[in-house]
Image 1 (cartoon, helix red, strand yellow):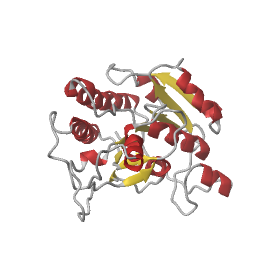
Image 2 (cartoon, one colour; image 1 turned 90 degrees about the vertical axis):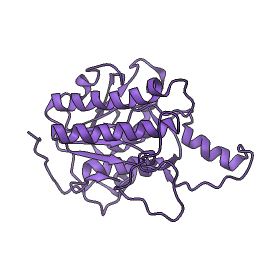
Image 3 (cartoon, rainbow, N blue to C red; image 1 turned 180 degrees about the horizontal axis):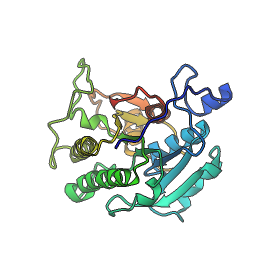
Image 4 (tube, rainbow, N blue to C red; image 1 turned 90 degrees about the horizontal axis):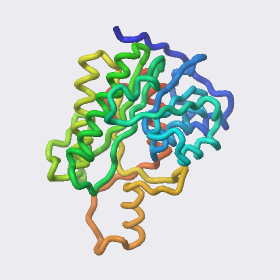
Length: 273
């Protein structure tokens, strides 16, 4: 059976708390009830770290999954608000049952972890298998837990279109049917993972919401640059040999994180965004 979802009207304690969480006072929220837990995969990643920051600022208890709980990367969280409300769990995408411990008893799950690289030797092994099997593993843990009210999946505009057309308004009804293992394999991995998520969610009666951002830019909590930021940096610094006629959209990482938080806190959220 699908767990009962509790709806509340949520007013944060101050304008400062609202701003810190990246939210607006006019939005509709589900308040974090005592003990509410959000599990976030890929915690040290670009998007996930911003999501965790905003969840902690909003008052949620968070379980973040990382490849190595002893990694120096995890020091970034020491400066986050309400750090005591964050627990880290070791997990990897391809290990069956790896997410069971982090998701057991959780009320919401944000599956953000996924390989993001545009240069691979074996697209099936390095991109598609981790993306698809990782999604299966997370959703299997969700079904096993039996406590999760909603899952938010980070997909991409890559699952919507392979080559954006200027002047065309894309909607949640659009799917990328062009990419393959040989043509834009990263895009193909995002299509395959999201389609698998929808298939499993329907089969197991999981409340699923999907976020499909375009090129994500903005600050990071560590010195690492992600490929999306590199594209923007190259465009601005002459890194490309010519002026390219791109039809690209850009979105700040804080807004992407806010979309994830609203996908949990807004009872009306549904489908793809």
